[in-house]
Length: 319
Image (cartoon, rainbow, N blue to C red):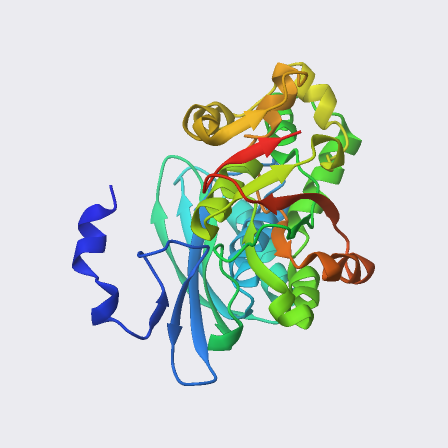
């Protein structure tokens, strides 16, 4: 699908474009000078929760996360809105308020935006950030032996689906929303402090742990091994997964990414499907030098969930 675009934009013709279509990552990066590069990213989607303010905050945190996944800081953002003509403007105001307050929490500003009419509401941001060209985090770079650290629990896809179906308990819904609207700002700051000890980074969103893990492994030229017992889950995840409450994206992810995934035979079907559960505003997945992993975990919330291994590039083993 993207092949016609990549043919038009060859890396040799755009030497300042440090991260683009050639090796797709969480955001594009364009070098301005020897000490500054611009990060550009965009993300928007339909509501994942019923509360307009929460939806706005979650969508904003999700878009901002791509800047943190590249090792940068957000500067400003533009609102992206698709809105039905028959939905009250007051609801949209709350969505925008949730997004704006989250952007302000990130130390950035809303500088404008664009709105279109649509049958289904959608909201998100185009975000511009900044990073030092020598300190960019990318998906590639993980090395065999690296510790794999995840900074937020998993399970948002199955829980938000349970919310939409009216089957989620209130406490589970609240825990999920709190996790989704939490910025990856603090974790990214700690990762930057570790400098060259962080070899690769991405954030876990729509392709789930298996999908984004495959991307990191593929671009790094190695495999990843996850310890299923070490994976952190949001409250209620097991309950809804056992009831097979999954979003449609989980099955699409499983259909495509399962070719690279080998899971131990004792995993139940619902446990295996959780590997493909699409996340909204998920945590950072970091490949960290093993001697620095404990230092990261001492300064930031997170879980050690596996390691990079010598294996066919892109392969995912779950034990």
